[in-house]
Structure formats: C-alpha cells, structure tokens
Amino acid sequence: MNSDSLTRHSLSAINSVIAGFHKNPYTFLYESDIQCALFSSLREQINGHVDVPGTGNNKYTLNLVYSEYLDNIDIVCLNPEAIRKLDTSSFTPPKKYDIYIYSLPIFLGIELKYIWMGYKKGFNILKRDFLKLTKNSALIGKIENWIVLGFIQRNEEASSFLRDADNRWRLVLLNSVDHLNDIYIVTPNEIYAAQSESR
Image (cartoon, rainbow, N blue to C red; front, side, top):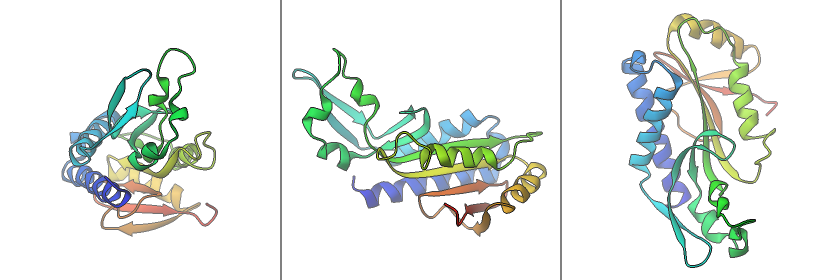
C-alpha cells in the first residue's frame, strides 16, 4: 500500500467508527472500546503487510496496524515504504533479539481520549497527546503523520469541553475527519477540528 491508499483507508476506518459512535455513544463505555473498534476497522481496511528481515535467515511478516506501539501510541499504521527503504544495517539487533521490529517507522500514529459521563478534564488532555506525537516527541522522524481523537459521550460534557478548547484553539465544524495531522473532537452529534496558529 502506498501513502495515498493508507491515508484513504485510515480516514475511512476512522469515519466508520465515528458513524457508529454517532448512532449510539453508549456502544462505547470505555476508551478501550473505541480503541478496539478503531483497531478492528483499520485492520479490516488496511489488510496489507510488510516483510522485515530478521537475524539469520529469519523474516518477520508484520501487519501494518498495531496497538500500543512504540511509545505506547494507542494505534499505529506502520510505514511500509519507509521500512522497505531502510538499510539492512538498521535491522542489526543490539543483542540476540530482533527488538527493532517494535520501533519501525510509522505512517500514522493515533492517540485517543474518551470523555465519559461526569469527566471533568479539559482540552489539555488532547493537547498533551498532540505534543506526544509531534513537538515534544522523542520519536520525531519515526512518525510521518498523526491524529488525535477526543470522543465525548454526552452533550453535557461536550459543551464545557468545547468552550475550554475554544479559548485556545479555533474549532472548525466538519462533516467528517477529512485529513491527517489534526486534533478532532467528536461529540454525540458533531465533529470538530481544533486548530491553533501557534502549532
């Protein structure tokens, strides 16, 4: 799969989970429920793999989608083009284990947050995930694209959360998640991109 195909399938999987959330937010009681649904949807739509050489004559055939990968990024899609271009010396294990398969280049890193009934934290929880994947990341250079998704179960929590974001970031109402490298807030009925000029 090339970059365009990975982007298209990733956005399609994300929007399919959002559509399910909009039908009934209580299908998802915990953040892990959303993570599982998105992981499944991504694995279904991005069903390719990449071969990575191992020590000796070994070879690892890896899926492109993983959870809790690298620095515990919620969900990632590996970058098969970048992996294929790596010099084979990149695959030399420091010891007897091929642990480099746990830190390969990422095409897309996704961080999730779930604001459920009674949750009081504000927009900063999404900003921290944004920084984890971008500016403050020790992994810069390993992550080509990113998305931060904040799901809000009830409108009661959504209104104060959106007000908090609006003080620091410009909110843009969207019909769907239509591009990578942004923060998205998904309420029971709407989708917003949170954009800051200071990024």
